[in-house]
Image (cartoon, rainbow, N blue to C red; front, top):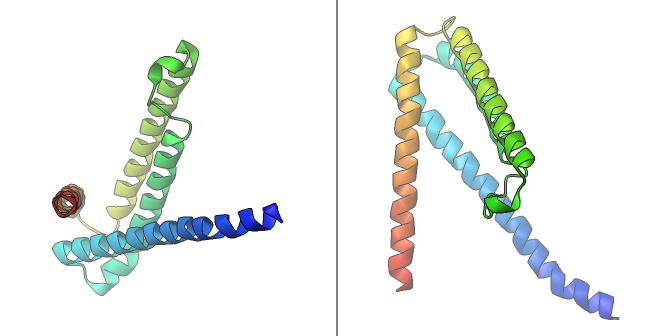
Length: 152
C-alpha cells in the first residue's frame, strides 16, 4: 500500500520533470528557428543556396553540441579542491581535445561552405553567429531582470 501511495506522490513530480524537459527542447527549437531566420535574412540566401547551406551548417551545429556535451560530462567544478591532480590533468586534456576537435569541425565547415558561398559570406556568418549569441544573452538578462523585479 505504501508503494502505491509513494507512486501516486511521485507521479506529478515525474510529469513536471518531463514537462520541463519538453519545454527546454521546445525552447531550443524556437531559438534554432530564430537563428536560422536571422542568418538566412542577413546573408540574403537564395532558395538554392539555402538548400545546400543548411544541411552542412546543421551538421556542424550537431557536432559542436556533441562536443560541448562531452566537455561538460563529469565536470562538477563546484568544489575543484575535491578532485585529485590526476583528475584535473585528465580534465585539462579532455578540454584541449575538445577544443582541437572543435577547430577541426570548424575548418571542415569552412571548406564545405566555400563550395557554395563566398569567403566574405563565411566571415559574415561568423560575425552573425556572435551577434545572435549576444542578442540572446541580452534578452535572457532582460527577462531575468523583469522576473526579479516582478518577484519584489
